[in-house]
Length: 205
Length: 231
Image (cartoon, rainbow over all chains, first blue to last red; front, side):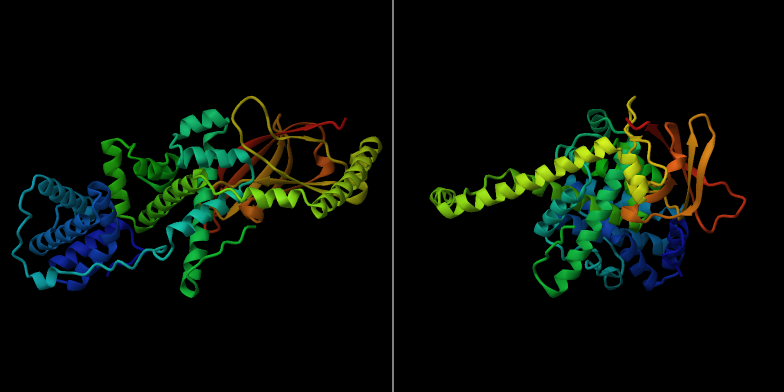
């Protein structure tokens, strides 16, 4: 049984083997493990949420068919395999080819992907905007505020920012890392509050 | 493609900006497909990026000005003038007091005053590229405690060692088993008598508790510190 504490190659090889042996449980585990990332990848490529959902469903259908029929040459490389299948389906779709027909047992392959797994799904855009305000107000120096503004708003690259602000690479990485950690904390607070209230109020330290 | 490489090269943000090469993009996509934690990191970075753009858009949007007539009415009222005068008088008095106190400290020697009171000074050390050393302090008094706040970075370490050494290599003070406290920084307390004028270096190393005793700690940073004589 694949566990989260196992490494990805172990988990992938285990899932491939169990799907080949006919385990429906392993098929569901594969969908749960790779579903969110695959959807993100496809949304990014298609810029179309509905199409991305369809393509993800087709990707898993193709992969499950294949894994039931035969093992992968490199079972540990299940993630690259899923990516390749997804991109092939996308190319086919773009060429307006007919989607790949399947002959497998549709009842078994129509696995519902759980969409409720995101940690910040209940946080609104307004709450995220407020969190950035709090984050910026808590920064120790104007230079760090400038660094984040240049990076996230003006889309300047690291080398340009380091040269302009005379900061080294390590300092840049630290500011970015801490900003993300603080933002994560603020979103978690907002997420918790979302359960009891529709409005989140951030406390400024 | 490991986490360190991803963080150091901002691959998450560069992926979101679409500035990775095709080979980098493929490697990164395969990495986050295989790593749910990295996928969550990507999700967070995307939300942060969106939130910054929204914040900027909201800040630059024109805001409705308060009704001019009410504002003018307020500042031109006698009650406002009286309140403003009182605030100004109080501010002037306190500023004068601070000025006198400052002059006293300058003439009497701040070092002695701090020393007598056993003062503690917090000094966040910054890592800045370039010739100028931003970490320059006046020599503390003998009884003064200087707490150097060191940034441990974001490596996955549990315990840290800080060593204060003169630039010629002579070790002045060493502390083992440190862990981040205030604002995620390491507090390295140095008695005033150990910080005589000169050039120093603070060497920071990190390790994990489950490492074998024979394993050396990883060196994380070397931060220069200059102590100048009090004027």
